[in-house]
Image (cartoon, rainbow over all chains, first blue to last red; front, side, top):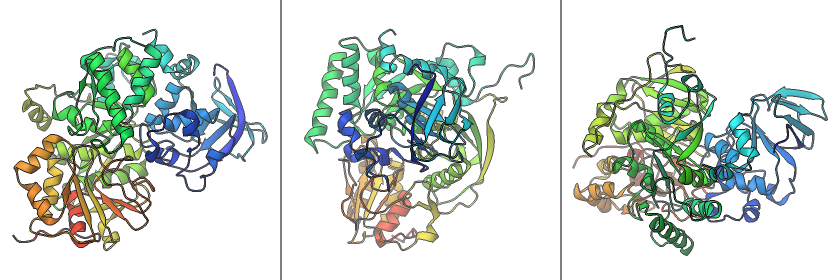
Length: 168
Length: 427
C-alpha cells in the first residue's frame, strides 16, 4: 500500500452474493494458518473449486455485488492476502467483510458499474486511488469507482489496524 | 437541506454514533468514517482464541481498555464435543482469569441474547462481538455489530473501533397479521423485499402499528435477517415494551429516537396485512417463497433454535403445534434453546415435556446449525433440513438442501415429514 496507483491482471469471479461460507467454509473455522487457509478459498463456490490451487499473485479480483456477506470470519480476508491478491473490485461488499479487509490491509474497491465494464481475464487493470478510477490498460477504457475513505487508507498505510493500537 | 437556524436532524444510528464519537455534528453523515468509544466488546469460542492470540502477539502483557466492558461468551461449540474446541474454550478461560474478564461459560447460551437477557447492554449502547448477527441487538435499540478478529483484538486494547456511518432506510410496516403467521414469516417476507430493494451497507429503522404489538423475541427475529440482506442493522426504537423488558431487570432506559427531521436515504412501505406463511428455499435466505409453493417437500432433519428463533417464545410456538402429536418416524427434531433462561422456562412451563412426548429432543443452550461442531448439522445427500435459523447457504449445514421457516412451520413439518401447514388440533 501507500501507492496511488495499484495495477494487476484481472481475475474475474463475477458472481453476486458470494457468502463467507462459499469463500471459506464454516467446517474449516479452526484453521488459522494463512498458508493453510489459502488452500480452501472458494472451495464451496460452484465453478471455482480449483481457484485455491491456482496462482493468483498480484492479480486483481473482480466480483459482483454483496461480496463477502455472511459471517465475521477473518479467514475470508486472510485467504486472499495469502494468495497475494492486490485488491478486490466489486459492485458492493458485505459491511463486516469491508471492515475486516481494511483492518487487515486488503484493498477493497467499490465500483457500482464494474459488471457492465468490459474486462477479460488477464486484462491489466490500474486502480487510481486518488482519482477514484479504474483503467483497463488493455482495452483503454476507464470507469469511476467510489472514493476510498481516508481513514481506511490510513489504516492500510499503517500496515493494518493492530499497529495503530500500539499508540492508543 | 438544513436551513439556517434549524438544527440538523439525525437518524437513530447517527444519534448513537454521535454520542460515542468526539466529532462535530457536520461529520456525522453517511459515508463518513468515525472513531467510536465502545460500551462493550465480546468474543466467543470461535473467534475468541484468535482475538486473544492477536492481542498477545501485538500488545504482549498490556492491560485491556476496561475489563468490565469485555465479556467472553463461548456459545458456538457444545461442551467437549471436539478436543480442538475444548482447547480453544480453555484458552478463553485462562486469558479471562488473567485479565479478570467475565465469561458466560458453556451452557449459558448465545452471547448476543445474553447481552439483553442479563442486562449487559442497554438501548443506545454500542456493542461489538465476533458474531455477524450482533445486529439483532437493533431490536432493542442497541448498536450491535459483528466484527472480525483484528477489529476485536484492537477494540479490547483500546476500547475503540471505527465505523462507516451508513445511510438509513425508513421502513413502515403497514397492516397486521394473525397466527399461524409469526414474526419469522414477517422477517422472511421483509428480507425478500429488502433484498430486492437493496440495502447493502445501509441501516434500516422499522416503524408501524404492528411494532408495538411485537414482543422482544419477535423483534429479535425480525432484526436477525437484516444481515442476510447485507444490511448493517435494523433498529426498532425503544418503546414501552423495551422499557418494561429492562424494568424487569431493574434497569431504567432512555427512550432514544431518531429526530423528526432526520435525513433518510429512502422511505419504504411494506404491506404486511394478512401475511401468510413463508419458507426460505435453497440456496439463499432471500429465496423466500409462500409455503403453498413448497408444500409436500420431504424434510427429515429439523432444528428449532439459533439467535433468530431459539427463545422460549419460539419453543412455545412449536409446542402449541406438537401438543398430543407424534413427529414422523422419518424425522429427527432437535430443540436448541438460545439461552439457559429459555431452557429453564421451557422446563418450568412444561413445553419441554410436550415436545419430548411428541418425539423431539433438547440439546444444550447455545448456537445451532451455523458452524462445524454445532447441533443440527447433517451428512449425506438424503438429509434434507428445515431450521428456524438464518442461513441456508448450500453446503453450510450439510450437502443436501436446507429450508428456513418459523417454529410453527417447523413443528407442523416435523409431524408430517414434509413441508406442511400447521393445524391446531383438539386436546
